Image (cartoon, rainbow, N blue to C red; front, side, top):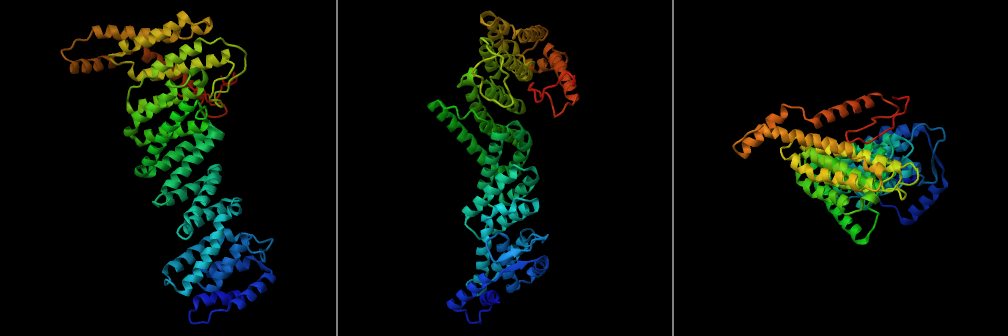
Length: 500
């Protein structure tokens, strides 16, 4: 056939090259011939690819182009059960690239192989042909990695973006995406792109799927970043810097765009990475940024968002055993909520919404107070047996007592009473315990205190143990779904009377 004569001309250097007129005549003749590819032809091509026969390689390239719809005169038999894009594409690319890399520079053989690669590079622009099955998707992923050295980086970036966006949204496809990422992450030229794609797709998924995406994807994404911690940490540092800049712009322009689910996804990722990597160098700068969300934006407008941020602060503080002024902010949040004049009875969906409702309802305030109470207890626990706890907690206790004295909403004003009672009991217990301890210097004081407090059961310790048992009982009821209540008291699914 004329096409075969053309291919052979690239490989047989001693042969006379075809004239341009002959090539044009051959191409016109080919356009007139309709070629139907059946299973037998495909099987023959697969079996002969490894031989490197130029005629068969040319035939295989034509079959791939026909399968992509780029050759109108080449069609796959209607009842053919074998898809060339699944079984021919990858071995063909592997053979051609192997021969290309080993062939002599400037030879006609290498020029012919370069034409094959140019033709096959169109595969990267045909992603829609690879969406219908995991086998096809896997072939496309392998194709992208093989072709990375033979096409422009922008083409690889576009292909990676397409498969990443598609694969991350489908659980059965995501494993292929991560296998490809594992290969690209070792390529210095592509590693930053892979990190960016991973991060963007995660935050985008959180933007649409919210907590569901965080629960499903966050462990996977973080685990991927941990594989090359030394490389990924620089990217995370840049994310933190970008976040600080975005907050600054938000404050300057009075914008509300930063209070979004995508931001929550970003914060959840950075928080998990810092904890999993045990990277304490990032702790204080990042906590400072998180506190900006709490201190520089009105509680009345952003409390649902801020409670999520506060939980992240507490998780980091617990892991790295660092002190944060979180209790003081929680007391301020109590003060804000308990002073509201409630109207209406619209139910607020905490699992979906990040901004406070325009019309503050009693139901919203009660749920907010419940979440703040639980967060307060969890945040107080690490320092509750510290020798300085009675003095430290006194100012916070006064803020809570001031709510009862000054709040215009008498019903909500009584809500902090249980917390005040818990604080008072813990304070009094520790003050009395101090009177039983004698020491000669500061070092001895702390040592004796730790020994003494470890021997007793403080009021707060009893309360926390009781609450833990209650939460465990609730979670053991196993209603439809997963866990009901986490350690901060967030309700992940509401129990019904039948469940109880």
